[in-house]
Image (cartoon, rainbow, N blue to C red; front, side, top):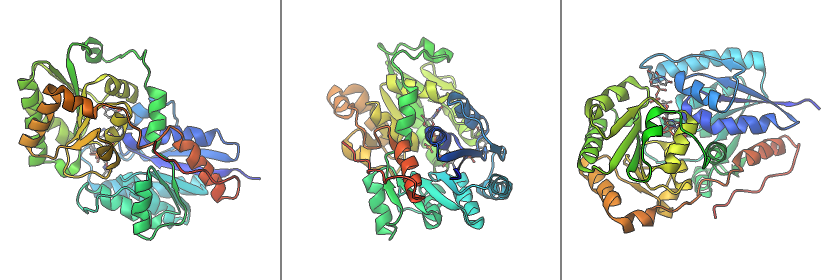
Length: 382
Ligand code: UD1
Ligand code: UDP
């Protein structure tokens, strides 16, 4: 029997981290030829992940430009994908999550009448403009996809409410599979500042902030809050690996540059980042991925957004929505830095997002779809 040609398409840092263990799982299956096509919507941040997970792309669209717009990303991906699909002839294309690469990858597959599997399906805020453009991207991909790999039961319910019940699997999130390969007790940092920090004596606050809907005054308010947190808590060391978006770089440096206990670093590679998260005190972030990773590592998270499509860890009590108003961010952070009971109530490891076997379930589900194996059991959170 011929091997199934399963092509994973991704282009940004979070997609790459979450697809890396899946590409490897697929490559390990005798019935599958795993193909890897990158759009390089992110160039440096993608290459860093490829390096950490020892992945090699079979096809690279190399589309990134500085300050790229949503239209240029989507159109360059679509045109580039024509060549990739014609040359590599996949039976199925896998896309991940909700980026412009995700949407363009799924649309291209549809134009070529190739089946689509959506990894990390069913997340919703039901606010068209927040997160922007991600909420619309994932809805559009839902309309195109044939198979849906939902991280949680809650995600499956979201799809069911929209009438999508065929080809839906609850697998857990592949990010937990990735974390299991990167986090180690004896990990040794290579980044200078991470080698120098005193993890026992200081409270290390890990920050990331990059969302497009926060660009402008909202991001200024967040940065201003971060500056005040650092200035008013001498026991804190704030570590902020700044996203390479020029908008974010400029804003972060203007508010946070020159503050002694703020460490603005280049983006960290996934190994450094995950192990820093494992050793930090608290996470402040607007990132999707960090909202999933930190709870698994027992770290409280304050989300710098108005809503979240990841309510599971909020329900489990390890994540709180801080919002984007400066005073709210200040008071919620201050409480976690000064009130041991409030901190302890949030700092317990929970795994609502997965058990590290998501990739195995997804590979099984694909083989089942083609009549080449049994149906995987759904992931259920403990
Ligand atoms: C994208 C995704 C977002 C995801 C985020 C993860 C879209 C529309 N947005 O947003 O969902 O949460 O990635 O980080 O798909 N840049 C570099 N080098 C890099 C990466 C980015 O220089 O390695 C700079 C470039 O100037 C680029 C800009 O950052 O134009 C913005 O990148 P882009 O992919 O358009 O948006 P993100 O905010 O990264
Ligand atoms: N990450 C990383 N280095 C960094 C910042 C983030 O490796 O300097 C990882 C993080 O641990 C998570 C993923 O990148 O796995 C999240 O990416 P990002 O926040 O850019 O995107 P989002 O998840 O919000 O889409």
